[in-house]
Image 1 (cartoon, rainbow, N blue to C red):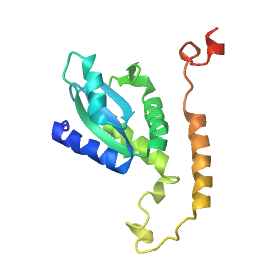
Image 2 (cartoon, helix red, strand yellow):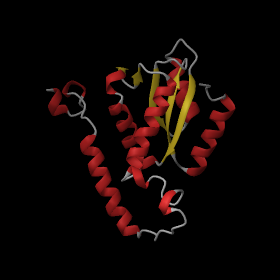
Image 3 (cartoon, helix red, strand yellow):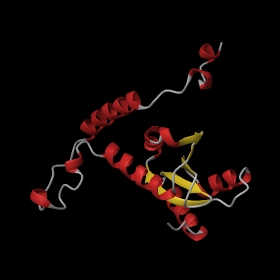
Length: 169
């Protein structure tokens, strides 16, 4: 698996800024891992910050664009799916290819209510059908339900790492 070039990372940063989105990124010093999976709105700056504390040259091996509002939910779900491979924090003992595959699977599961609907309009009996646009109000209701569902499925942090002062006492 090949890492992104610095020019590609710069182009991604320009896209992020112009579109006002976030990215879920996969960073590692080597494609064989370990990898860091996180979110950012400015990839070059984030990579520079990570490089400061790392003796090995870090490279970007994967980038997934997402809305800023969904970045935290997606990142949390990906990291929860990989909790068995967690080394420390956002670092995982998997290869970049395994990380990319896990990210894709998790994102697909989050963005599709039914996996069989994933390719609607592209193949099978749905080919050629037009779909009625969903109203803004209906989308808000669906969005709120999904956020509530995803929030229930994201594991809470251990009590000793909680930011709640009542828990720390």
